[in-house]
Length: 212
Image (cartoon, rainbow, N blue to C red; front, side, top):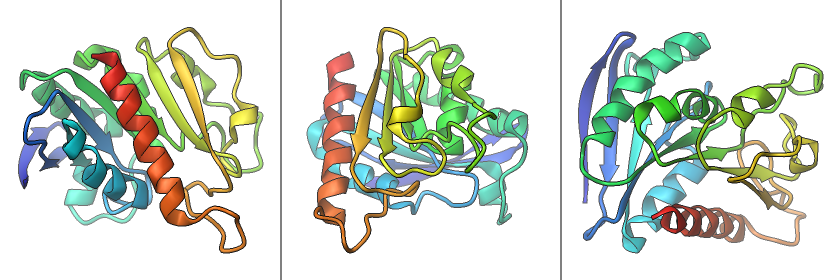
């Protein structure tokens, strides 16, 4: 079952699209990246795969996307557009896990503890700008204050799993073979796109249910 609602924030109206489990055990809220929306392949796959496992998935569109703009604003504005949504979701009576892909993962890491979430799912965390490993964003990840699952492609130009620093207790990294920042698998790879998405969905579902 799918339905949606708008939530007022200081950055404008955000939109939540619910993909509901018939007998929900947990609620996973996922935001999108800075250059795309909730149609990203990993978000679509998770919204389809997790409700049958008892996890309601809430895909959250930032106010800039709802307003029809092309590129996301500064981190502080992204946080303003996310925090009221997360707090609304936290009040719905289910254990809440927050997350997102790329910039959405950064937002969840920065705001998760304050929103009442039980954990963070970071999909394609942008550890650094491509080609600039000295500009690390590891602090956001390391200081999430919550158990955190990082799902990262081996070939991600924003930082592969081997580039991550030693993570604190409660942080877990799952490596996705061959994938790009968008978890796209090259045609020459020995694994297919469907296999990679199944890996991501299985890892996220197992981890979220393991928090309960």
